[in-house]
Image 1 (cartoon, helix red, strand yellow):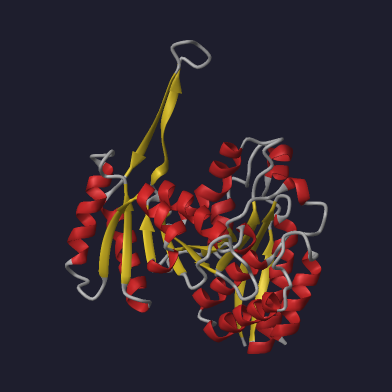
Image 2 (image 1 turned 90 degrees about the vertical axis):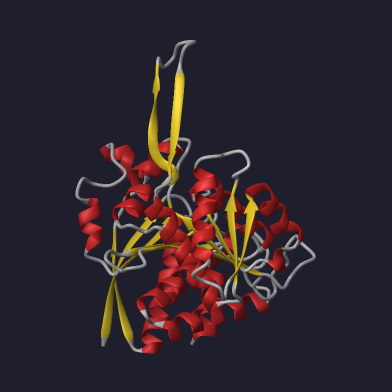
Amino acid sequence: MKSYSIALIPGDGIGRDVTAAAWTVLETAARNFGFALAGAEFPWSCRFFKDTGRMMPDDGIETLRGFDAILLGAVGWPAEVPDSVSLHGLLLPIRKAFVQYANIRPHRLLPGVTGPLRAENFDILCIRENTEGEYSGAGGRVHQGTLDEVAVETSIFTRAGVERILRFGFEQARTRRGKLASVTKSNAQKYSMVFWDEITRKLAAEYSDVAVTSYHVDALAARMIMAPESLDVVVASNLFGDILTDIGAAIQGGLGYAASANINPDRSAPSMFEPVHGSAPDIAHLGIANPIATIWSGAMMLDHLGEKVAAGRVMKAVEAATARGIGTIPGKDRTEAITAAVVAALT
């Protein structure tokens, strides 16, 4: 029997609940489809930071390197640890160290879920550059606390980084409806975003079977709301992709349905799968967190591992549950009830 080693990082707040829920579903799928999942849980979180002064140990990256994949819940406890500390101490180091340069976020309505738009027949795959750009961490502050204080944040765009994420997007478009939207703000950012547009045009010549349109980010944001059904694959930089995918989550009914995968396409290191939502400390003790985004992320993990039939069945089980109205209204169903409904549909 084939077995996969999975690093589990539940994190903070509702991250613990939704990770446990997704793991229950994934273990059920593994039993049903003839493979095994061996999970090892790590307590790395803001609580860990409060206890140790670090979001993960010094050897955290090397510890994770031996796993086939990583399933993460949610990280953040802003009342106790600044978000800039938790993000740069755990998520971003993992993404960069394992060259998880493709952040994949699907946006579509599940059966039984009512979104805020009149549109229902949309299926958008957002591909976000995940290791450089605006989140490179290049910059600094001088004269802190004085009237002369200066803060500088430098976006880093490399030809290799931009070309590989755009090429990844073109390849995804080929497997879908053959349309690619490349997102910049090149009218205002005349160096980095013009550079991105130039590389888009260069690659488009290699992919004559893909219809390419370049959008400014503000225009694409409006299109996602006004005509989401017109979009197929959307490729954007780290910051723009982060913002646009919250719009994507909103039009698909909320962050409770927003899944994501941080992919190392050449598989030289483990990829990481996580819901888009945060740790929601205000509801962490209520047992009403929607685990569907994490279960969906887990299905993406199974697909990445090569267990495509099991991944498809997990998604069918999620859709069967939401079609019955389970997990479709925030706070109505308990986490355990949603999980049980998905498991029942899976078995």
